[in-house]
Length: 107
View 1: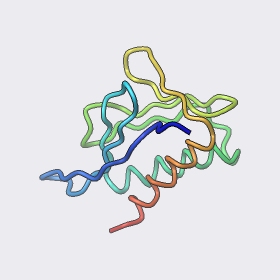
View 2: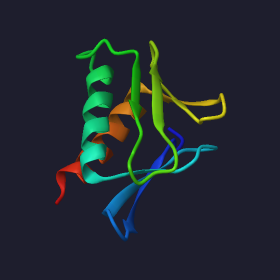
View 3: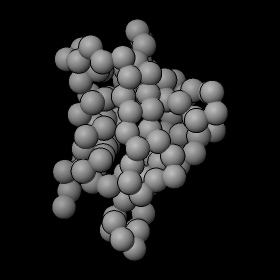
């Protein structure tokens, strides 16, 4: 499976350690631990069928870009803010949820 995303820990003067989410041809999104945990739970819920939500949205406090994902039959589609989308299949979605959850769980 080609690399669909990466999560890098960064430092912010006011918010401390943040998780920076990098997706191909997308702006960087930066999440606090709490935000990462919330998005992780939402992603896992749609990936496992526990939620029937069709959209996941968050405006992270330390990020210049919103996180918006449309839920499809075979995975999610993360909006780039310019009309484009990056698809993640369910395996990739669960992987993203896992790395966000691990960051969110650490204090």
